[in-house]
Image (tube, rainbow, N blue to C red; front, side, top):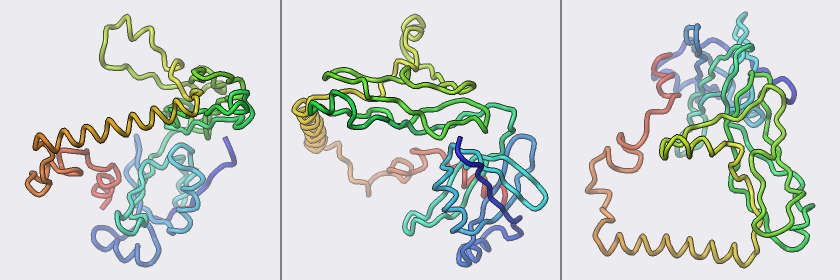
Length: 258
């Protein structure tokens, strides 16, 4: 963990459509919620939050001060204006210091340019850039680091098993949801490939093949009349329609708080 991150929030009295004025004044409406507490409507200066968010992301605990209340929370969701990109609403999920939480953290490859593979003109391609871990809030790592220094030949790889986790930190296993139980038992999350070594020519050929497959699929759909005009689709079937995604947590929280 890095330095302790802190944020002062003010309780918010403005709700509903009136929050538009808050945004014009450079304030972001937010909510703090979690197990065992009533949701707290709060607000924070846009610039202050943006600076903190660059440091904390969604995987670093933040010490919140709301009047006389003290909370430890994770930034659960940040809702942005789709056109302007400005922050419209923030959801903070309060956690307990003595209870493990699950967070998605980035994976950083270290030793770039130092491996024998790279010195010989080969390319190390990262295939996995983030992973879920479980730990106490203050023990959550800022990133999982995996060294590629020992890679030498095309086809070699590094996996999650090559990461050195601090005490109390573990990867979160997820059942694949298919295949027999015996097969699932043989597959462990530490076997997941993070990066592998490629010959430049082989990588270029693979990219070209992938691009060709995508073009072929598009042509087949067009020829078969399967590329339906979006204007003729029902709203819930269109990309982003009701049938596509669950509502954002921030909107749910905002509705509750407002």
